[in-house]
Length: 377
Image (tube, rainbow, N blue to C red; front, side, top):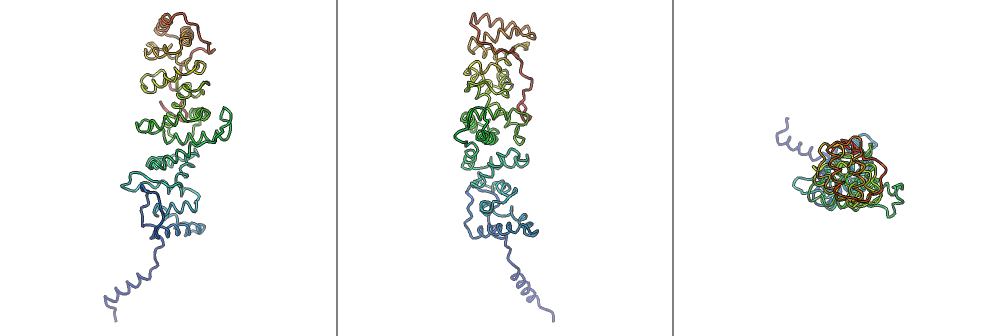
């Protein structure tokens, strides 16, 4: 006797009721992205999901649990993943993938937990994060709420109380330099935005001098951190060099010479041109001597010396100006127009005692100053 349609429906219902429950079902109760609220795994479903993640992770040496974990990890809610990552500390890129999952639709920012702040700090300090992952992380940090972002910057810029002698030769100073470079990678890309510019400049001013010098040398070296955007390298190098020029009595790092000379001789960089000349006027002559030589060398080779540059030079200490002009007019490659302009200014300044010579003839800056890491002007 054939079963009736009603019996078929009954059997199908019984079969469905006997099917084992999906252990991963609780993981889909909440969004997988971050919201503007701090991740909190307090509901029974979230706790069950975190427990399922932990159990599967512990059995990862077996092929099936390992595959299940890989498939379901990023499908789990952000709250459950955060609890699992905090408790189990999985190796590999799982913590990184969790923290860069994105922002839920409609949220203004991502409120990351201290676990993700630490994940970001480690990745930023490594200096070897692949470019694709670094871009993904930069986007995640840029979307972060103000609290986690401030905590991350504070974590990166915190230094040991004693950085050791000048020269940044201690582990404490080198570690502090790495942290400051990592923090700059977050601040520099948005330094041209009005609401972020002040934070960038304040960070530069608060950097210890030994760390600022080491960071400038790192940015200006051919092997600058490979995972940094050229914009970060260029802005970091220029900002530290200009700050050191105006506040340090010691000579500028060699990596700063070409960058500072370029800013001093290019009025089209309106804001940087004014800031750099202001720093130049605050600096003692011995410290800016090599840069001054580059500026004078560039002026001497111009067919039409920029009047704005000459006006700024005239505002430096008179003794330094006279000494520089006298050496510049004797350069073999000086153009007639430049020689006439410099002699006219010497005659106008008058009989001023010359400053102690730097011992070198003015030299022109390279046409494309190196900025480290392939940074372009």
